[in-house]
Length: 285
Length: 266
Ligand SMILES: Nc1ncnc2c1ncn2[C@@H]1O[C@H](COP(=O)(O)OP(=O)(O)O)[C@@H](O)[C@H]1O
Ligand SMILES: Nc1ncnc2c1ncn2[C@@H]1O[C@H](COP(=O)(O)OP(=O)(O)O)[C@@H](O)[C@H]1O
Ligand SMILES: [Mg+2]
Ligand SMILES: [Mg+2]
Image (cartoon, rainbow over all chains, first blue to last red; front, side, top):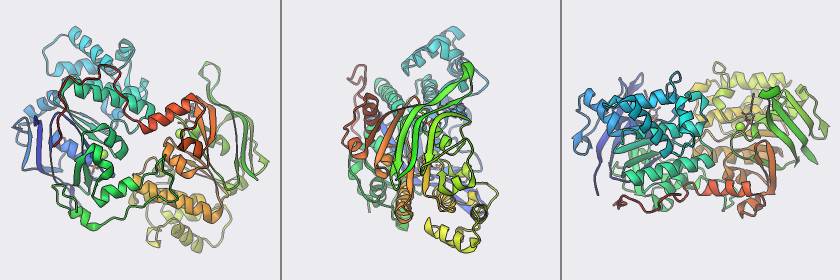
């Protein structure tokens, strides 16, 4: 397969008063033109993995890896100037909360035009046109009105679609989406996912889809990494997620109430300290 | 016996052109010991019904009653001895500078209990928190532990009815399972009546015997859980809601043939 991103032995560490906290511990994965899901409980290191790829871990946090390359370019040693270009043009990330990612005092049009012109020598008119196209691409019906609006005038679903549109402006090779639909109603969630899915297919993008929703990832992605305590405990095809072998994955699946299968009690997850030490290559125990 | 009854309830915010009719003509009853669920997309009026019951909605019309007693516009201490509420965000619901001990002892004193010491310990034990948690502050607790404290506080007055507003929506599925099990155990033990709001249909189906579906402030359908599980619904909106919660990803409306070759993941 076309290898876009190659991450080997990624660690993210934070010095704290009680010593070094290891948020990501030896994570390795490869990403092609596919939809790769990352699932796990909150605190398992999903967001920090995504941010580390973009080199968005703020000091005093430290990132190390044996390799973290995009199309053969090593990102770890790239000067910050070049890295900024990477972030503008090759890799985009949709953050967990779109409300914090948009500038509240600028119209959506101003922000989109600015984002487009950061890396491209084009006039305002062309940037405006491209922004309208992007909003249409994410199924926004009245893009002219949206361009004139401020972020707070948008509903959650609209805000999330606008974020996706903005992230797509540079036509990135890789899109990292951090819980992009977790705050949305199921009906809107479906729309946003359908849009992302179409874009991934049409543009041949690689997508890293971070979520805590196992059912969603099983339906939406091609492949899944399951994280526990900063490690990948298991990797599987998304369609096989419901038959996953690792007791942690099984425990998460079994703890879900099922609409079509009534149960008197839900299964509580019995944690095994050994999971935290499981081999990072994802072999099941 | 009827624990809760709503009849033709209307709730609105603001007036004139700014008026929002959040709940329109809502009617249902919940029997003693029953669990009744409210589902529907956000903004459909679910929380507003719970707020109206607890006296937090400024303007409403229609009738509401608890254990046969008609509710007026004010809620007295007696009401909160019978009805308690658990919210979605346990962090916002707990005072950041109060320890678990303070949270519980205040509530106990407010309701006239004297043996606070033994009650605090038994409340903590009841929600699966050991005595070690007694003097912790909210920020020293995980999300699930905070929700346990919120439930312990709600149980302190020994209520008969719990109003639950998305009690596990902010929690991981593993923690959700623990909290839902806990609520079911407490319901059996104390013969509680639940009125539960959730956008997660599987959670509501797990907890409730009957479920009302809300859309735009109105109840469009009330059904037994079996009907929901087997998709035997009469209203189109309910069918859509069920479908959306099972099939997240719809087939693409445009050209279904991918223009890029799908990559074999292995
Ligand atoms: N600045 C920081 N200092 C110390 N620990 C941090 C910092 N940022 C995140 N962490 C910790 O890193 C772990 C992983 O966080 P995160 O990647 O955000 O988890 P997830 O996205 O899976 O919920 C968590 O335990 C979190 O508390
Ligand atoms: N304090 C308020 N002032 C004005 N409108 C409100 C207020 N609270 C809720 N609403 C409106 O009432 C409607 C129902 O809200 P809510 O009951 O919170 O919905 P749900 O819980 O189903 O998501 C929404 O349109 C919401 O915007
Ligand atoms: Mg996260
Ligand atoms: Mg609500």
